[in-house]
Image 1 (cartoon, rainbow, N blue to C red):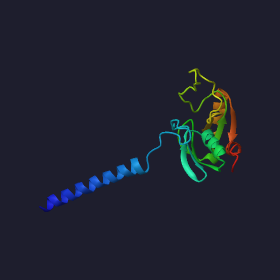
Image 2: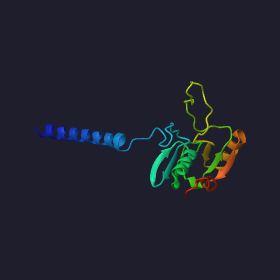
Image 3: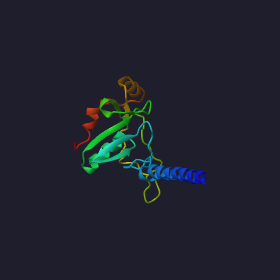
Image 4: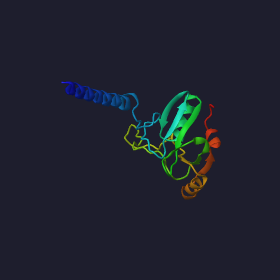
Length: 164
């Protein structure tokens, strides 16, 4: 009789632990899959953790976070960026950024249409010019040589955020 009670208690503890973990992982703290600002997919080698006006969120790229901060007239703090080459999270203060060039970091599949169902040229995209982060200066230089663009330090990139 005692063995049954002990087995039942262990099963109950395991089940309640699984339910608690599931709630915590999928309800309380879900893994973001889309940018909070433009709803584009998050990619592991472009994703940025940003704090705009004191609220932390995942953004698809550094340019999207800068655009959001400028549009909201709020201060921006980049918490982590991801090395484009490896996908590892790195400190933005030590990162090198390639801005502009022919490579496109964020793309979307929706073509803007007018009322006659003809396509219109895009007038504004919050993720342009494309901005790629690199842990090493040599990687940023190599990428810029292949794709064009300018290599920027963190301070140069953040100077584009107007409300610091």
